[in-house]
Image (cartoon, rainbow over all chains, first blue to last red; front, side, top):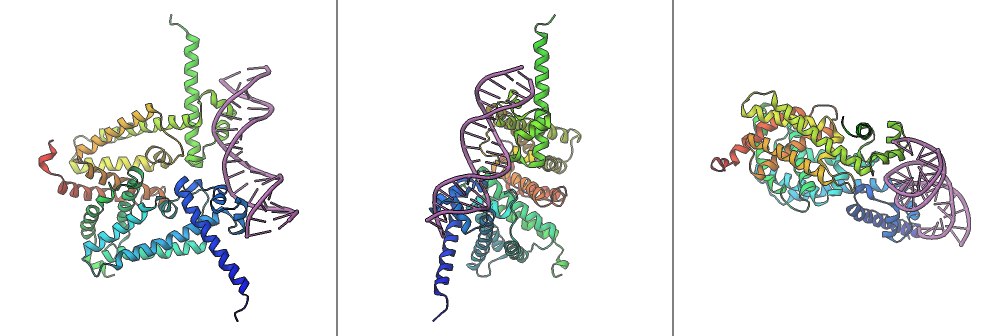
Length: 206
Length: 206
DNA sequence: GTCTATAGAATGATAGAC
DNA sequence: GTCTATCATTCTATAGAC
């Protein structure tokens, strides 16, 4: 039959354990903060000694890297799902849906937001592979905004500032609540009006 | 003449050294990040052993607390100065000046912004005294926005989200530049238009 | 692959001589 | 008030037995 069945099984088992370790890491950073991830705690959580984890990941940064990659993949799926349901909605509706999806993704898991979109872990740099995925996913998001009418850089910068501003305030000053989230639609309307004023219709086709 | 001249001199000398330590702390956190402040480095910087600093501050948190207080006092002065120059400007001009002053204060010293307006040092809680000063200064800022026409909570939240969003993006993605800062006037115009739409003229006098 | 043992480097803070 | 000496803790990571 197929060659090296033992080897395959081992590979599968190994991948499962790696996933388990990454999953436990997410739990721990949600409890103790992103920088508070300790190999000892992690080992205890998955039922082995801290040193044994090095059989699966060469370093702690490699674990962060796996989380970083997983986070961006989750972001791509989340944003795709958020638009699938709507069959050709009006422009305002589409813009609101995109903005809501983005803020909801970020605030639903503050630590993940921190890992993906803020620079807060000392000395952590994503691997080239993970970074490439991140860049691709970000390009998708940019296209989504482009479809809404956000095309030039300055306008895009204004949108990202507004949406991350709402996100940050929500996370910092009303975690678990919706004090800033409920301002999303109002913010989008405001941004759309501004965008239409500042976008030259001629250059839109460029 | 006056009693206890020796004691007075000692007190003055002591205050000077405390100031020197706090100043060196600012330098160090700008170099190594807010969490990267180490007592050993600090001692080296002020020309004494790390242990000797404990004669001036009971703990590292007490040093953070002194920086926190100093930062809010600097904020109050900065914002007051920013408006003094303008003799009864038009409403839009006043709003722009306030927004520019706020963002400029924050981006001119990212670590200070982090200490004052973000929650990022593990286990650091300002002392009641310092916190009281912070609350007072924040109330002043709120009044300043109220003068611009920002009175209800939701509108205030939208303004803070926009201004901190611009600040965060500027610090994170274009440190030292002005890519987001140059959007301030546009953002203010946008916010003012929105604020006038959402504010009931009747309730403004309330 | 998991363990014990341990290296090696930081850190904040205290005790007590001077 | 400053020093030396030192404690106590925490952490990542490696070596080698089993």
